[in-house]
Length: 190
Image (cartoon, rainbow, N blue to C red; front, side, top):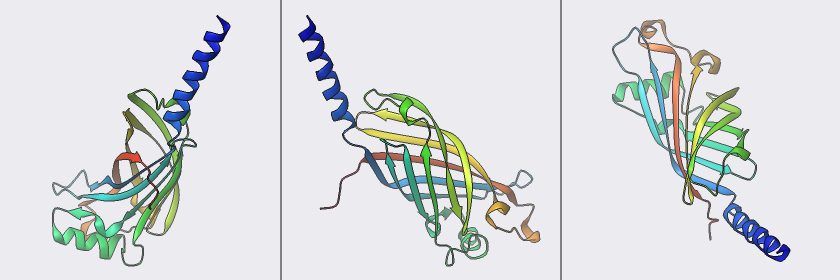
């Protein structure tokens, strides 16, 4: 009887370790939506970027994001031009980054499909300025893929982004950021 228990335990451990054997997940097409619409303006200031790269190490909860600022697409070309030239100065500060950790990665059961709350902390760099960010998100495990989603706000002034008085009623003081990533197991380049 004792042999069966030991054998069962060894099989369970082997299955767990093979599922966890893949510790790094990656995407080149994470989607980030930026919304700086002012509550007093009917004009929407929304941009989407579906070219964010991200790496997630599920063994440590470490995550990194990089996004090219010029890859944000607005509904109106003039908004896109003002965003890149006047606000985020994309030529001078070509990308935004996030380096952080899912603090409760141990609560995410990678061997079981499901939806899990993630507590995320890290450093967000935009416009050459780095600030601490804390937020929650959702991680969905399905088969061999991991999807993550998070919503948070930043104050534009915290990142040195100045809104000219001419348009201060159209552009919000803060921006809502939505991040959606579909991670796949990382494959080393051959």
